[in-house]
Length: 476
Image (cartoon, rainbow, N blue to C red; front, top):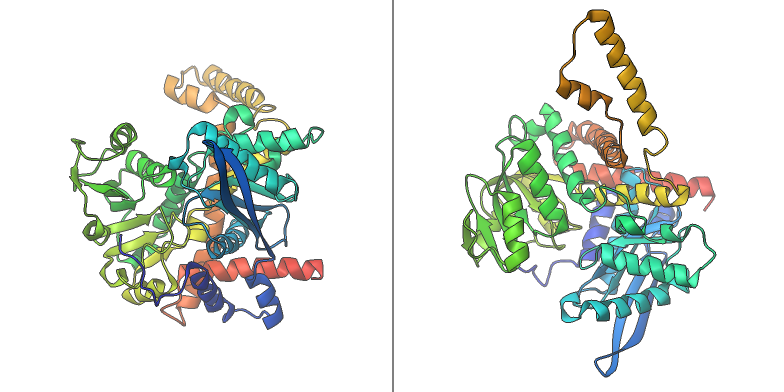
């Protein structure tokens, strides 16, 4: 992947630039704007863990961007690239992300400078628990104050360790499981959380294609069926987005780009088969369902209808923005398009569905998990069978009155009550639709006066205004 030019602003500076672009359109005082822009606090921890016969020292961060709503929410990532600027930029994006989808959290983010591949599972557990200990004792992990989630390099396993560590340190807290989201089901997780971000990307694209006026702006036609899609990053988010778009919307995944090579098939890649192969071999090399190549830059810039960057920030930058040949870019990753590249793409007419909206599926379903943990009951437990009984009674009465039998398939589908997964998907779909409706309304309203006004600026404007209104209501 092309590396951003040294002269290009940092990730944090890019976020601030995009913030400034939106502030120009809002009637918010300079003082309040600055209050919203800056991170409230960042805690840096350096701790030692005795491993392999000696002490190993690790550096971690937890940044709180905005406490206009509490608890604050944001993932913990494990990567050698983690630094304070990155964590603060991601925390800011979390604030705006929660605001755009109307999830009642402030923004936070955490990170640990570590390559998880360098350590065994037992070693990672000891490191994670010590990191969690350092944060928990300062209330930087707490069900009512700061609730982490998985991010790059972490997953259900790490969240279960953190939740258990919190419980050990707070033995009488009945809501201990709500201290973190993204947990496995047997540790208080919720169905649909693992694939939530990828599912949210699918719902975002579906909603975009529901509006012919929006599709026309991008230069495309019709719906998602047959659309050529490039996926950059085949981790949890990229895989699930590709899988759902391929299997449920009949889109064509023509290129999948990973750090060690890419897979191509102009007729469409069978996503699940590709994932199974990659999981077993750690590479696409040898997979019969497409062509493998180690050089990926030209594929990232290949002609397509939809480009989905689903890995790191800054992968579309001043070096390659001119060469990107996609009608629509949907940001499944956080900050994959730099501020400089954003301006270039906007002038080219590329429609960008921004990260703060596009990848908000994770935090939305995390909210559902948090609510589930606080209520101590899974969704659907109280009403599912009652719904089934009412539906069955209605079908029986229709069949009695008409003397005809409804089809078995329809009967089974209609009678079945909503379980937890169904309710989670319904809630996520509703959230993504409502958020997109508010964005597109402002987008088209402003485009009538400024052709360069885009969805990202609309999203920032809505989010910032909501945060500002919260601060005003609090008297801060």
